[in-house]
Amino acid sequence: MKADTLIVIAKEPVAGRVKTRLQTEFTPAEAAALARASLADTLAAVRDTPVRRYVLALDGQSGPWLPSGFEVVEQRGDGLAERLAEAFEDAYAGGPMLLVGMDTPQITRELLDVDWADHDAVLGLTEDGGYWALGLRQPDRRALVGVPMSTDHTGADQLARLRLLGYKVLLLPMLRDMDTPEDAAVLAACFPALRMSRLHGRLQHSASPGLLFEKALSGARVVATGIDGQQVPSLCEVDRWQAPADEVDRLALSRCEGPVLDIGCGPGRIVTALAERGIPALGVDISAEAVLLTTNRGAPALRRPVQEPLPGEGRWGSVLLMDGNIGIGGAPALLLRRCAELVRPDGLVLVEVDPDDNLDDTAPIILHADGGRRSRPLPWARVGTRAVLRHALAADLLATEDWRTPHRAFLAFRRAPATLRQASYR
Image 1 (cartoon, rainbow, N blue to C red):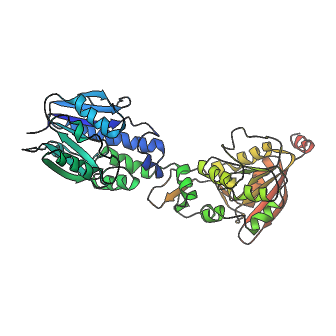
Image 2: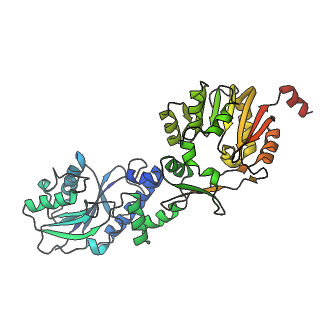
């Protein structure tokens, strides 16, 4: 005897609603894409198995990932146990049913086309303590309702419940669920032909730079390199960024006139140091993690690209580009023009430049995480004094100071007076 109905219970693969545990390594959209690929692999294996009926018990709306031949029923019930029980009831057509989830894309026709022989139920356990398949001859709510779901002992509890009811249970091979980034990596390596595996391979080499930067802020080891693979030391100093302002920072901040705008504030050490001096300051960054870390320090920060409208435009006493942030966007000339728009007419623009005066490299950088992911190229610039002076002159910024320590270098600029700017255009 074999199942004559195969049921897939699934959730519509919408970003932010599925595979949230993958989001430690992937964006919500990437996690949803992996879920969609896993679901497509699962549905293909189910559709390849010769049975009388194919049923998809779906939470959400179907999409182009659904092959033909499936009857779609809406999930019902409170909690997963009830939803499973209802799925069996909705799919029942008088014969045995085998239900699988969407998290084991490696399932095959051979696993699904199993002979139940004289067994009353079928159960496939997973390595994390759950189960990937459950087969019943007919619906039986007693077999499911009340079984604790989503624990590391759900599979054992489900098996105990079936046996308590007197069912003779056939155990299928144990499989690995795709729940965590490690699960996804292992499955992709073991089953390279899967849609999920091919997508995983592409995502490994095209991570969002923002995601990897946030991982670095959270304590993960992330390294920045040029496209030539050479490490960029100045962009790998996360420990220094997260520490309190050091002596060199304080020397730079002693030049600041409030209020101060810190562009690319990171985890907020500069804004915090300014607040401790009683100088009004605001940090801006595109990273949600950076803004959270800054505000957790008690300093104000705003999540916004510097190119978008910012509070106090044209009224800031000082604008800061610390820690090589002159490289943001890979276009130092445009960034300096933006700084000139942000400061008041006599305002200060303080730029930390590369200690190599002759450096003028606008090639992208790539971020590499310990887990093997690397980012797509990120527009960035690494520039020393000569290039920054040239770009500043075009932005009507006049150099007022050039100073350095053994390992760091800085330039200070003032907006050119209106009369001087007008004269330069004659």
